[in-house]
Length: 172
Image 1 (cartoon, rainbow, N blue to C red):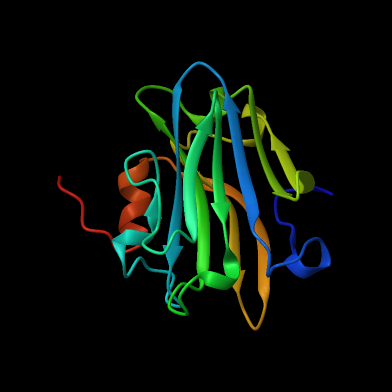
Image 2: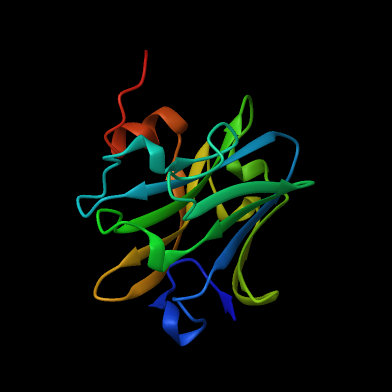
């Protein structure tokens, strides 16, 4: 199913939340793009940095989230049922490493795949953004059941602004 910015829904309407899923993120444009999966608590904060998954930390402690790449695609293998109870949300973000803004992106696609079948996807392009240097693409969150929200909005100041929002101390 094709989703749009602002979409919210129950994941169980589209896939089996007890089985592994993949979140695939592909971005093309003239910059270097980094993707992240942030495991957040009920207060929307990072309480355990072992649940910040990206190119420099490829997996969560129990392997519930595992990061890999395939050419220009970031792939997050996710096992929702194995996440510890303190993780109430997974926020998938992309940042620009260096110059440029998300407005310069040619294409940005996020797919949720299960059993090699695309179950949910959202496609965006530069015109959908302004001067953001980092965006939160989607969030998977637990409120009595796993749900999805297409956020597709971000922060002009970049990754440091997003990290401050999530309660991560950064060096100035």
